[in-house]
Length: 140
Image 1 (cartoon, one colour):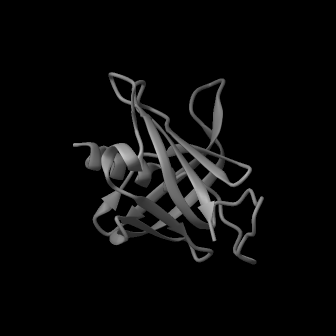
Image 2: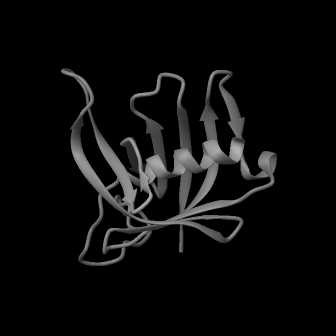
Image 3: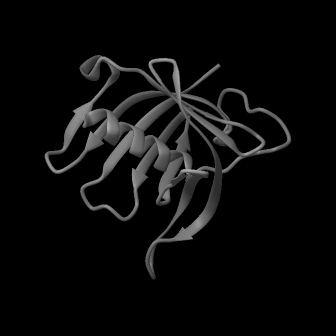
């Protein structure tokens, strides 16, 4: 169950970010293009925290300049899809967020909100009150 929730959260995260098609970002970049390693997920009805150490699993996302997305668990490819980002996505009449949407032949996700700060990617569910917040760090 945790693996499924982790996968869904990862997909939502990928749907929210923007990409720069001109070049691959370096350290300190605020674009989603690049490789991201999962650090933790917090949320759900009980507000639980999951990490690679507590679950025994690693997870990684790759966002490419051509809008392709790949999700890995324990270094095994789980998903190949396309992603797009939307700046100032309207959540309500008074709130906007930067949103990420991942889609593919057998996959369509709800948009998730994302924020990039100091090589950390934060994603959270927009329309789910007790959804998950996820943290990833940029890798080389």
